[in-house]
Length: 277
Image 1 (spheres, rainbow, N blue to C red):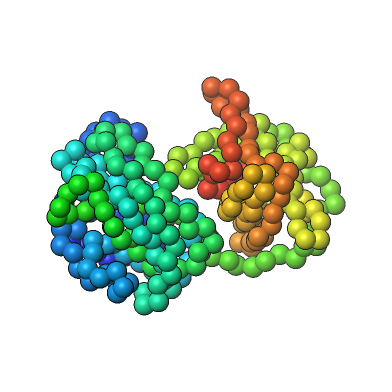
Image 2: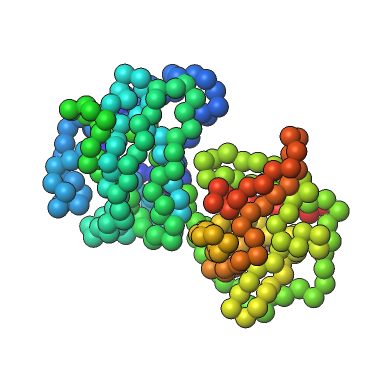
């Protein structure tokens, strides 16, 4: 068990202590959680002495959503974080309060998928601070197993709104790889985002609609979804970034799997890729 370790440097900037394969029924993977058994001065001084953990992303990054695995060792379920304050900072000194949420208690199951953590979409920060206001009954210690932070790619360049293709680029076969917020991925054939029959991905800008050939697209990052309104970033294969466009055309992708047609809503997606044959 990792005890009294408070500041975690995320060398890869995405995962804390690596992501566990939660599909394998082996409860031994939960036997090494992080624990704080001594309240110490919180980096945000107004909080006083608390159980807390601070994540260092290495540099100021644009965050997205997060995923949390609470303490899942059967002996220590009562130590899991419950009421949690979330703060973030660019310099580790001036802290911005993001909110408070309740972390569900784990059940000690061998297969444990975790739960959606704080939504940090569009937050720019280097440090994320989680402070345990309460746990599930332990008088001395509080802990977690893992936290995953999804980060938006660093911006390279913004293409002008005049990037419009005159000709269609039809695809004989369209494949999509959809990466979900919980770390899973789904491969779809007959992939249907926008205008797939033309081999184009269509986005809306302030100056009208823009068509981008699938062959030029690296990744499509879903950022914020509210009903049929959403925003996203399109990373091109040459490294350039189309940023901050909104759309009301549809809020899901769909395609074929070995088990039949599958529809995946944007609220479940971190990003997807498109390949055109």
